[in-house]
Length: 436
Image (tube, rainbow, N blue to C red; front, side, top):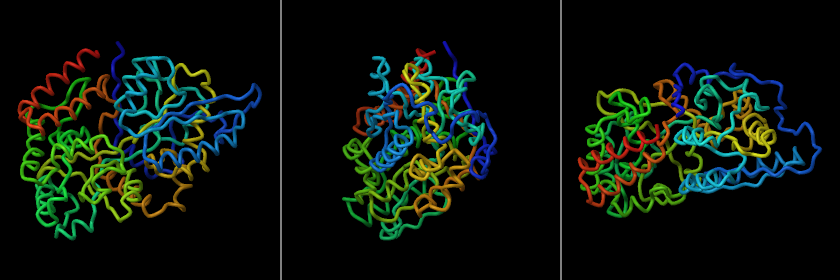
């Protein structure tokens, strides 16, 4: 079996990524960076493109695709898009049937899986221009020294909050919250704003939240193809959220189930039911627009005296289906999305801070207040960021889903936190073992 080749996005690499205008990395400058087809003969080529996201991402991507088609009249692009929920089930079925789209929006949790399924095309030597992307960033999409995915942008996890709701409840957040600070704020929100308001959504089923919790203890979610944390740490994590739920400061099991995996427009912070939401930094624009009120970002809570756990990583990637009939045209479309200045201005920072130095520079004059918030927050996180293994081992997606299932069983009283933690560890390790 192919073994995982984990990559680290270092703090130094992150600084280069945020600051450099012309970055040096893997270079292939023989391509046409404008995205125009060199040879228009041979009839029309039809490409399919798959991505997940909110409605504004769909709208922006469709606008960029229209520009690509205008520049490449012999290429027609058929979009396939949805919310995140169900996305991977759909892609798995398509790959299994040999009918996946030509260009695929990819995640760190699934790169390893799809490389092992021989579903992703190596991108080395294609027409995609790589010279404006830092090598440390490109390396996060490599396995076995081959480039299978290119980041569409970078971001960090953030705790989005509603300053007006918190002010109404008399809550003042420190710049760096502790877990105790969050618990106290959630209780105060519930007490001051009434039973119809959730102090905080129960994030015990969130792999992202767990990752921060255990990194503060010097552990990782995955290490060397296995779980990188202990049963005791997971039990503590489950107990934290279960205590908040029982105190009425966190969402009920029914409420949690209703928004778990839901599209952004149904998030409780959008409807004014809670002042907090765990989101990627690139989602600040979408969530603020949907909520139609000012929202801010802060760091994920940390333990008093705990280790810094913040990190910056690719928000998502672009990949090409290994069985595409049109690898050249698919690469042209990817290059266009990543490197074309006009496309960059359309797409903005919706998929995170652009990885191309030239695109970042081109965007600066047009950044709106929400984009500036994202850029500024990622810059703040970069200054304290610690390296992280970016590409997950094969089976990671199934393990992440198992965490959500286990969390729901605990919330509904089917298991204690101790039982849930032990069973999760046993089942998750079994999943990872069978994938080796």
